[in-house]
Image (tube, rainbow, N blue to C red; front, side):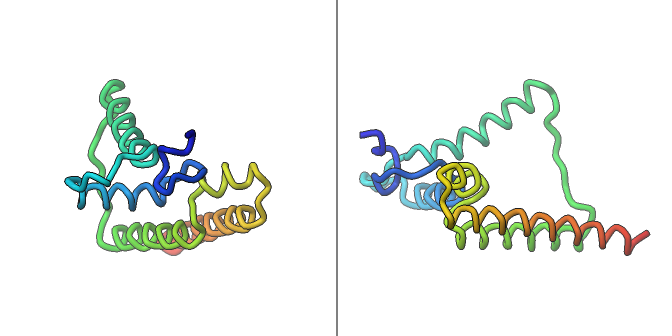
Length: 134
């Protein structure tokens, strides 16, 4: 009964990769009676609403953009790589990093170390770009 709020009615950890896909599917098929809101979908809405609410309450809300086409392309490439990595690893830093590593799952450790390695490579790339322009 504790797992009734998940998409497949089995035990699963909190993640944002699959629930984002489920959210898009829910928007496309919202009139289907068999399509239900799960804990993951509601968590996505909660993070967005909570972040926006806190930014508005503390008066820190502001619109931001990118510096130019190259900066936009870098962010789009990074987002695509993160999306591909999240789907390939079957989870993100929450699903694989926190939940999976806490159970000492070998595949979660592989995914977590890959996430850390990707972050290190990303920081090195950004440092190289900064040094190149100076």
